[in-house]
Amino acid sequence: MNTPWPSDWLRGVLEPLVLAIICEGETYGYVVASRLADAGMGTVKGGTLYPILNRLEREGVLKSQWRQGEGGPGRKYYSLTEAGQARLNEQRMRWELFAERTSSLLRPNQEGS
Amino acid sequence: MISVNRYKRQLIFELRLRDTPPDEIGDALAQVESHVADTGEDPVDSFGPAREYATMFGRSDGAVRLWPRYVLNWLVGTLFGVVLILGISDQIRGEVGFWGFNPTIVIAIGAVGLIGHLATIYLIWAEKIRDPRKPH
Image (cartoon, rainbow over all chains, first blue to last red; front, side):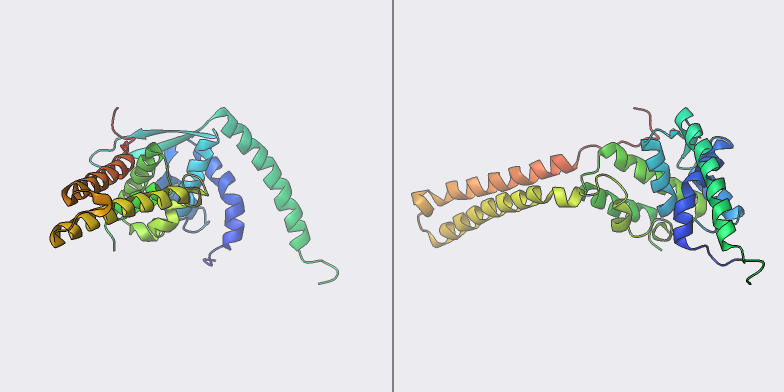
């Protein structure tokens, strides 16, 4: 199923997904976008991803460091702060509850339909 | 396909208009450069038009908040420009300048004022954009 997800859905879930990917290990924007695509979330453009990363950094949820690449223009590596880990834990719990309730409402009624 | 350098120039202009701090501009430019190098994509495809992408930075009311500064710049520039034109016009016609000033003095006031005004704008805009990848 390759139909793009509605942008409204993605907007709500991108922050926890980005935090979860960065929680796996220090990484940079392109890898985050690739991981999202590989996980079936579709193509997330730089114009969507970097403002989220910048905001999370401003809020103290992420910290970052620029490193020079070999012959390339360098990359900005992000990692989670303690506040970021706490936010991810909270969002994981809340998302599970949200998804469970949403699924239960969306599930076709066994008796009625 | 637009080159990354051209996109960066457009982004600098738009971010300057929004009064974005130079450090934030430097970081945004480096992110664009790094992402485009990794993906090989057209910067406009990745980030959208520079004008739209710039709205993601700085204060959301940046352009609105700065309108008094734009109006003042326009008024001061126009004032010195008019003085300069009047001085040149009087000089050509061989008449005494307005308020009895010698046209040469009027030209000097207009020219110095206009150059000073433009230099001030340039100095404000030229506040150094720091590249976060370079040691400082």
